[in-house]
Length: 184
Image 1 (cartoon, rainbow, N blue to C red):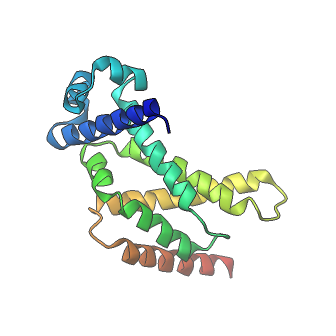
Image 2: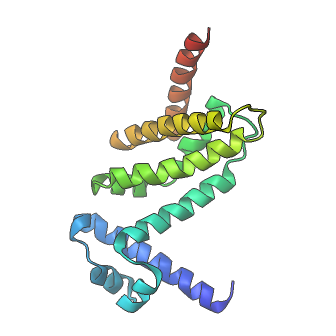
């Protein structure tokens, strides 16, 4: 990474940090770009070189988290217990940000971002399997993604008090109980 890229990354982090800091203090809808730039100690011009609006700051932040999640998703096959463990452990490391988004009423944006990341991972996990129909893969990926994303949303709404490992075990146990019943 050259000097210009390092400076750009540093500005991005400062802007993200500033937005999250302001979100702790006031409603998201009342936050202005000027406020973010001032708190980040960057010019509005710098802000607008990187983002079109404040929503894009969050989108880019979650894009980087999603990229990190996809890069660390190393399972060879679709194993519900291991997937739940990996999924809730990863997002549990970002607990403060997820709870902040929830407190600020940004659940819809959060659900979209989490679903996007999960969908790519699910598709990658099942892409190596022999399958007759790519549409089947799409259906399964969306089904799985929606379920895990909603379970994460529930955990967030409950305050993420339960440790990730315990929550993953409870989710796995419940899913396997009912999936086993349905397939028999």
